[in-house]
Length: 231
Ligand code: CA
Image (cartoon, rainbow, N blue to C red; front, side, top):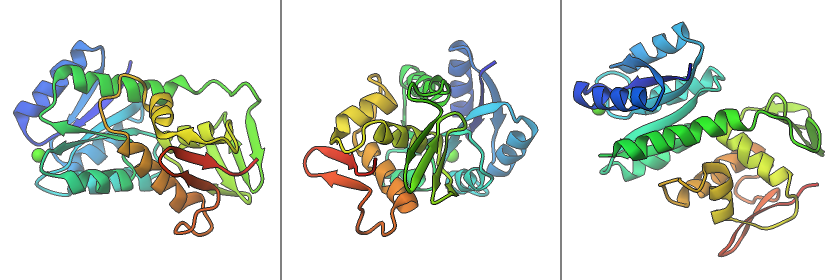
C-alpha cells in the first residue's frame, strides 16, 4: 500500500487532502502537529512520502522537514505553502524538501504532484543499464543503493538530488537544459516552475563542490542549463 503522511493543522484542509489522496489510491496517516508527525513517521516506517504544512502551532513544517532529513530518512517530502510565503518556498527546498504545492491547490494538482514524486521515489530503483555503479573519480554513485560517495566519503542526498546526480553522471560533459532536467526528474505533468531545478542544483553544489561559491563539478551553461564536468 502506498502510504502518505499528511501534516496539516487545519482540519478542513487536512480532510480535503486525505479524501483526495484516498480517492487516488493512497493510504493516509494524519497528523495535526509537527511533533505528532515525527512520532507517526517513527511508528510507520513504511510511509514513503510526507506532505508537510509550513505554518503550525508548535514546531513548523520546515523544522519537521529538517528533522526528517537529519534522521537520514528517504521519505519524499512535499511542502504545503501559502501563496504569501514565496521566500519560505525556497527555504523549504533548502531544508531538504523535494517539492512544494502552493495553497490553494486543486485535487488534480495535488495528486499529480504526489504521483510524480512517488514515481521518482520508486520508478528508478532498477539499476542503471551501465551497471550498479558509476565511477567518476573522485565521485562514485551506487545506483542500487542510490548513494553518492566523494573520495570514499558518503554524501547524503535526498531522492530528488540523487536523481539529478544520476542524470548528470550518465550525461557527463554534456550541457543539459534546465527544461530537460525538469522534464526528466519532475515529469512533463509537473505544475511548478523551472526554478526548482536551480534550487536543487544549488543544494547539490553545497554538497559536492570543493568550493560551492566557485563550482567546478556542476557548472552553469548561461541561458541554457548545467553541465557535469567529471567523467
Ligand atoms: Ca497551517
